[in-house]
Image (cartoon, rainbow, N blue to C red; front, side, top):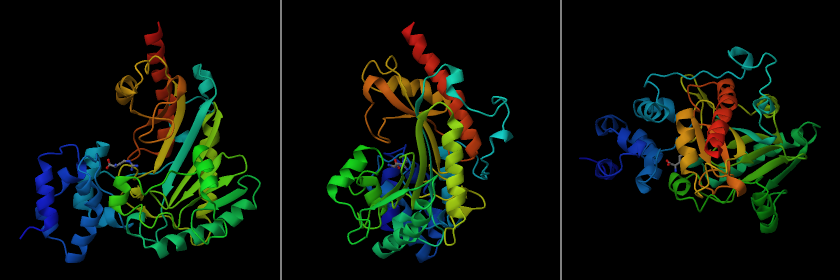
Length: 368
Ligand code: DAR
């Protein structure tokens, strides 16, 4: 007797070909699962069933979901990341492991004829002893935040990372009011409300808003840790400049520091690398981006032409406020390599360095 989920998915399969989770769901496999595993896998799919217009349509809710439901997730990963179903991820931050980079190892976009740009590299990380955000209780979320506040106390004491933590949790010693929250969001330091995102809400990731949410920011505002967004942690470095290594290396040293602290074991999979909520981020959890003005490619007021040129270059295009946000003034767009999985961290940074100059050339060809 098919379950309600199975009936819903079969109905949606024919109407939503771009919803990867719906397309990769297999009833025969689902019927082999125990009742507990059926409940877990159903939870992973809930966002894509309730929002059939999803492109990915699923999120992991436990750190072991990708491994425990490999027959399903291997299909999802193969389809989204364009890899084989038995692909295994390898992490590597060493730029020296790559061919064809400048002899001094510096990825300096000034050498490509580009001016100083807004550079940003971020990773998602989850603590392996907690459920992922889609399955956390309100108490889990507060416990995680309190765990991180002990880490922030150590960062605050360090010249390289010193700063302050701002909490959205009522009763937290670092609690901030709406004015301060909005000020930090407008400064692109704090993340936007999650309970207005229908995908994250259906996934359970936005539950208990705003409990257990907050952000740490360094004095120079170039090092930020989000707590309780789509992953337990989003750790990012950004600055206006030309040498990509500067944000990449600072991020790596911050990660090594945080991970060296007792109780900060991140969730990893032997096959899939860094575990993240969304399969689109699995492996590295990394997005490396530049903000660049492309007035010719955006002359029609949309990012359609920029996306058409960027996609074959392996680059994604977003608005300057992140996913689902508008183009910036003078046609400024957020450009980043699309790949996250079965590519190393070093290769992602090199892809940004090599791709941005091709996009700039395309912009200038329209000019001439
Ligand atoms: N709405 C989700 C987004 C997936 C990719 N973006 C993330 N993870 N922020 C979808 O399945 O389309």
